[in-house]
View 1 (cartoon, helix red, strand yellow):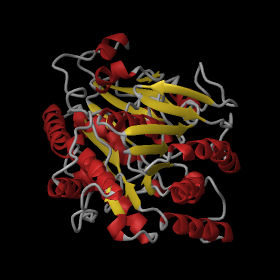
View 2: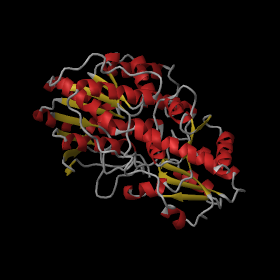
View 3: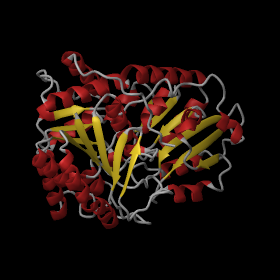
Length: 454
């Protein structure tokens, strides 16, 4: 099948959407599909174009069996609401000539990865022009996030907010398939007008053979000079507006008098400079730059406790993909989440959940776990079991291929294939397994790859 994947982010970005998109493309290609990609030059999470690429140039390359065409992109040095819109729109506009060129290739499926929805009109026009089926995969509800996180002023009830939401709703309803990475996010898409029969849950996955508990102390503990008997609290991932990174500095400051608790923060993003400035005078903090993917398991295993901060207004706008690696590493997880969200549903049974933006509750949970190694081990075992049972890429990729085959008319789609149980992310993954068993064809294995959020 000829599949065009169209999205802002792609390899060699090692964090976030780009990594997952690249893995999806590479595995589809490995299973016999002809895959091409339209994307931007790599720039995330540093918000500067990587060495070897130029922001203002078109560029073509082959990456692991996938033909990749890159369109120019404007990357602001400082982020803001209007600048973010111009940033996204610059790619949507510059990529239109690539869409036109690939019309001659006549893709059978056009898959748009969101962010950014600015590219939806182009994707839909191409699909209609060549008779392809259209698929929208939502990693991030960017319209909701832009208003709820204050990136755009006025709120969803303003004239701008109502117009943006109406436009989003109009676009979502025109794709043949709409998928997202958690059951709650799929429910949100349905609430926005997507026909439930077109909705699919495709959770992000993790390679439990690549990410696993080490039987020895991580090399990072020795490298950072952390005593062997200290409890290490780790955050590794994007340091942006949605993460609530400032909470980590609050907690590290509150626990500065505990020499037995060390904090390691690893990643990059818009909020990193402020985090570094606040943590620099603290003897219990270590701030690391992005690490190579080859060191991901070593990094995740430096943790005795993983922390996952999140702003309250980001609930179910995104599902933190870094959680998969935390769970697979077999370490205790403390997450900030509200009841009723996918993050709460997953972590509450396999870790500890505290209210969002409550630094005191997070600090108290860390202190409690620091003094209870047996409890940490129990939570780590539960997290590892969940990752192996529910985050296997096998079922996820089966659903992807089965639905693609159904769109192409190669196999009949069984009734109820796209229904997603509304309770939890776990139930979303379970519902993903069911249609794969029903379809009985097209099942393939996606290499279990963790979100490289380091």
